[in-house]
Length: 337
Image (tube, rainbow, N blue to C red; front, side, top):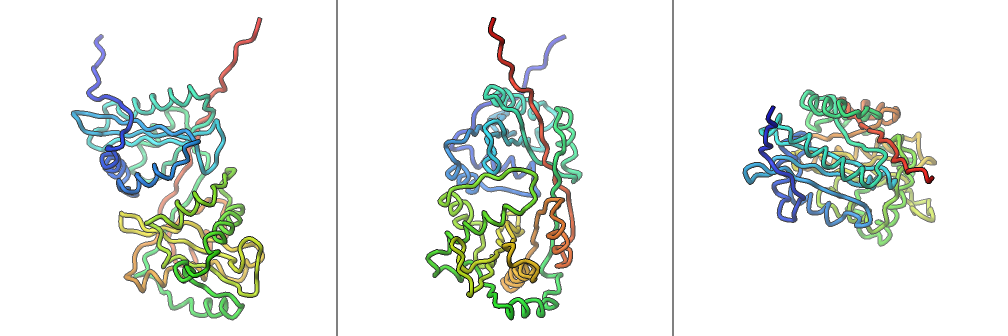
């Protein structure tokens, strides 16, 4: 029996491929489009000490598939890698995804990879992707829920009393933009962000980025909206690391036309006073005043407190996202005779 000749070829990504890669990823995952500019920033900000590789599938001179894998910089272990395979909808069912996956797996196994991670969701368009992963032994190991709110449909006036109570307790809610005059703003937010992340139940050990990397990837990200991101400031406090900052909530913009919440949290000593909810309300009101829009937020399944808060604010759950994991056999060394 003759073996069909592949109608595509694999090659490494090159610097001038970014627009083509963005087009494939956006077509493959229209729920979360990306731009060439975003990909360029990711490349520029990537830690050169961490492994990363990207492979393209080219058909008739056109990029139709993208596979990328590398160290998980958010939860780094030298043996753990994160990856993704995207194939343009017009080029599916030709073995392109399988070829990209096989090439990435070959490269990672050569490095002694012991665990691979990726994401998928329960949405109908992701069913083929979930089946692809499960056929290869991936298991859904963690759940994260997505919820959405349209400020045009939210009754934001009902939170007047909440904001008044928080203000009366001695806490000011200021946008990150309004805090630009504080020379220690970035450092304080960096320290606060790390402190808050320690209490987010994410089912993985977190890796701390350097201050410089955090500022580049968070505050200096053009998609970050400092005018719509708020900080809770307690003037009677002067923490050695975070100063008077006790909580914050960040909002970013996706080129798909929606906004997303990056982090919302309050330090332990100031919880139970409605500060986190007030931070989100402040962001929602600021967005509504600037023209409004849809906000998407993501919370891990064990984070019941934040899930309940979002529901009280009017967010509606729309999807479950799964972190898929594949455990690879540990390479065996030959016993010496």
